[in-house]
Amino acid sequence: MQVDTLIIGQGLCGSFLSWNLLKAGHQVMVVDSSNPFTATKVASGVINPVTGRRIVRTWEIETFMPFAVNAYQEMEKELSIELIRQCNVLDFHNTPENKIAFTERLKTETEYLSLPDQKKWESYFHLQFGIGEIHPCWLIQLTNLLAAWRKKLQHQNALIESDFNFNDCVVKDESIHWKDIKANRIIFCDGNAGATNPWFQLLPFAPNKGEAIIASIPDLPRNHIYKQSLSLVPWKEDLFWIGSTYEWKYDHPNPTSAFKEKVEFQLKNWLKLPYQIMDHMASERPANIERRPFVGFHPIHKNIGILNGMGTKGCSLAPYFAHQLTQYIIKGEPIHPLASIDRLKNILSR
Image 1 (cartoon, one colour):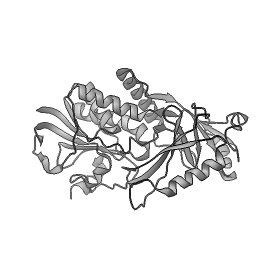
Image 2: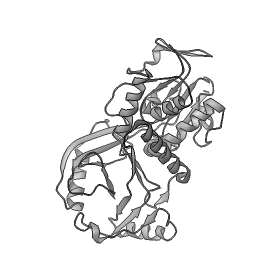
Image 3: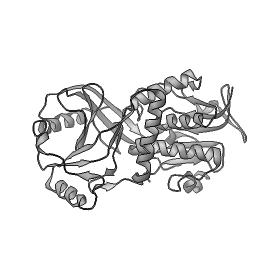
Image 4: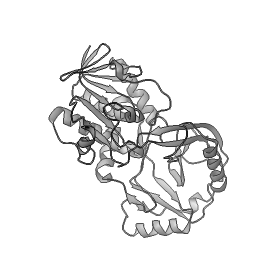
């Protein structure tokens, strides 16, 4: 079978890349195993325009966020399912320093920060040092997106459910051969597997581990995301996603009792409502030392590409850079210099 592009992985990057290429009239084949605990499948799905204790704008959020929102809304219409809604963050200050930092930033950052009605939340939470609001924030239904797009790919005979074995891949100057597939190019959107990819393992990957609890909190309103060290994010029905940690050193990628105990301790001191823990998940994220994506084609093997390394900002970054990589393939348009793997060509050329 002949295709234009062979895509390895159907996480957020693989889904948006295949979506963009198919819209451009390209023939694609996506290869993906059905692993229930990929980074995308256990992520919260939040797009937040500010970050960190200093509450600063995330990297080029003025460009990436509106682009991502439009992309999700367009895909939402195509798939006829709910994928995105505005869901602002209520930031519960747990120290006087947190409150001071928010108040100071509010003086100059009125586009994304404001003060909500504190009294409205007194019956739901123990308020220590007040609340700030971050807006607009967006909540993406990632599990719905992945499942619906997978179904669409299957309907178009553009998906092979299989593990990808590098030994089965034959690279030639003008073509890629994998099993009975012949492609003009291959692009890896394979998350943490990128760190062991024979063509890209020299990139500065730095996977981290995240854990999340799924809890039933029936009486908590679902029109906000609630944050106090941990985040409470509306999930499905009366469920909330609670997380997440960012562990850079860990013994295994599985859930831990320490994280569960931490969540229960915090909820006891923060939440006034009854809750019930329903599930506990963990996964590794394909982050990297530079905290900038890996986008583009290998400097030596010109038909081997990558779209990876989105880290914790994948919901806002993946739509934009999947589009950029598509435009590079179709029109030769440049990729953002801080995301293009051309910046690392000396490393990859070793």
